[in-house]
Length: 519
Image (spheres, rainbow, N blue to C red):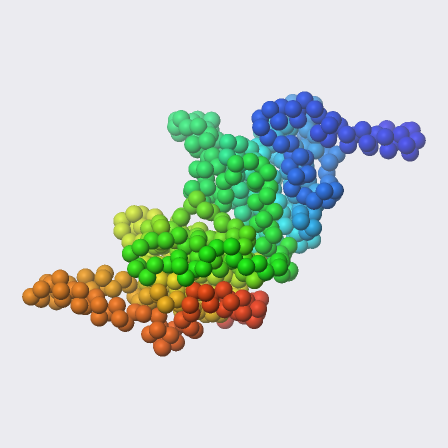
């Protein structure tokens, strides 16, 4: 219509075109989406961002039509709604895939829009939020070397974004293949039970490739992936997923150029931690009660709660300041560190360090988990990932030995002077030594015990003698820690340390490209 009609005619045409790609302009498609129990791509954005806080770009984009047979494809916005919106008053780049357009598949034009989102996030220093539903490369466009041989620059872009701005993925529908590749490079992944899936390939492709018959829920459902640690959180509704995105971003700056946002301090809602940790090292307790007793009320956001439960990782606020907590959980494996726990903790440490969130380690660790199963999970190698991430971190870090601080696990949990903790504390219930006293006696003194007139009495005497040497007061005397404190004194000590610690420490390592991760 170029050159025809009045200015108002052209404005009317613009409005018509915008209306045709809106939810109101596609009632049948939106009704089908609602019939699946899902929100539309645009409804999700509306619920995520502040009211009136979204500026779309690429709304008039359409499918590429260079492949024979796809000349008549109709793909509103080419299957992905993109733009910049404000979330709790702070801008973020948002892409929301539209399952009503060829199952949310990625077309050539839509790929350009995704790349534009990554570009804006990088140039403007803004978080990138991906609302994923369906996907993979659009088959109608993918069976053409003219298009596909070019590959995709978006993964390079996402690597460039990694550690510079927060990248979040909400899995809100089928997510096998392409969406899972996007989510793999995200800092936080939330999935909706009953709607979302993740995986390299769906059941049909698995069946074709291997002959295995499996449902999509058993293959890549939300609870499955949360237990495996592929997803950080599984929730029951889309609204919960969008809330989780908001909460996660609320602990982090828009980019590493900024400072994590502080809130007003609130007294803890949990009980006094003094009553939580038993002196008897054989009695379990829930370390989350300790976290609740140290953190501001209502501020605890646990990450990967269903994966590697022998360690708790959570974003909290202490005196209003964001803090990342890594805590051994005696209720599971006695709090020992296995391969999943090491990788869970290492990734969490990496995310916190990237975005300037100080780290607090709550230590009650009997060591690394031993045995053939640990060997099969490559613990000897994967334990190094936690040491590696902690060693290259530059944020302030604080450690509190609640009870057991044994062996290399104590080191990996930032115990003592191992990784230059800005504050290293212990509670009166702490025991710090190379390994459990009982285990040490049974290994090193087995011959003497067996040769004794009363082996049981001799063993008990040895244990009692050595146990007297592993209390926290000797640790303080040797100045391996800064102080022994009462549980009630811990929170004020942490608030004081947080107020004084510099945002970053200078690396003592020589200039280099980057360290080489053990895994």
